[in-house]
Image 1: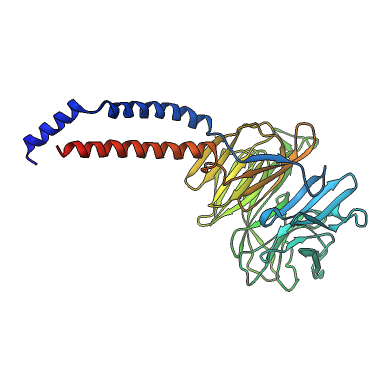
Image 2: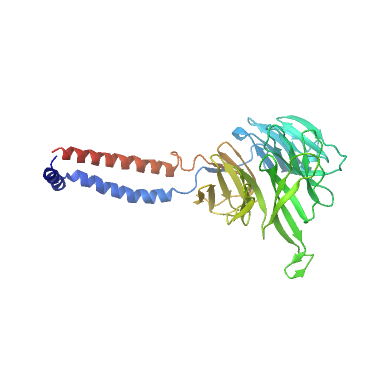
Length: 402
């Protein structure tokens, strides 16, 4: 087409354009404005629900470990005592029933091992292994002393299955390595006055531990009656054998407490009530964030959700690309005490403002999906946008032919 003819065609198109074309553009602009308000109104977090504990009514969940489809192991306290049970396919099987066994109250940890079994400890130098309703006891050699086990974590090597235990040595807490033969290592000297509480594996020979440091040094005066309590993070190394684990690095935070450790590749996210710290195992550094939370749970696709305390109105969605603050449809209805996840569902256990124990569930797949209001509006916006511009483009092509 010659240039002068093309110019005449565009001029004729602009002069004789159908009123329906401009009507479509006007309607589309109106749709954009209305859609923007609608999308903003449906941008709040969806997929949350609150319910009672179906396994034991009116029970306080002290610790829990979820498997697939909501099946779980739980330590739960009731007026009758502390239960330790396995809940599978809607059926509860009591492993420790307080009517016959009062040792449930002494359970300090519940750890899932590499073979999907659960480990707890009820006695000194002893680990109970649970697989479904089957239990067995691993008795540890006591030639290097007697100790209670506060927590433990296996390394990431399925072949060696070695682990580090947080131990109560009587006068102090410490760490001991444990090989698959049941012989613990020597205890690590604890000269920093730290009460170690939790531990998680970071690699085949690295672990991250958290605890608290209690100091009588309060401001400019020593006041034993009001000690300072500060949260602590430790990086430990243990390669096996009888030698005690080594505390390689330690960080003392100014306040609050660390409640959750989540491994993300070579990093460990340590979530706390006043800050969140990330330990990078490549350069052995601590990086600090202002993210605060009462619970932090990892879901699929390397996403971590940070939940606040009772009556908080937003959550934080963390990915490697950055953080996103998402407003909740309703304020947080419970004070979270313990949490876990199964498939796409996050379970948070705690008490509401009336002191009743509830379970708050969050379906992470519902947020932004086509079934949610936000997802449906996004889909509608894209669909209508595509249809209108396809019609406009087709009209332009048809008129350019003349």
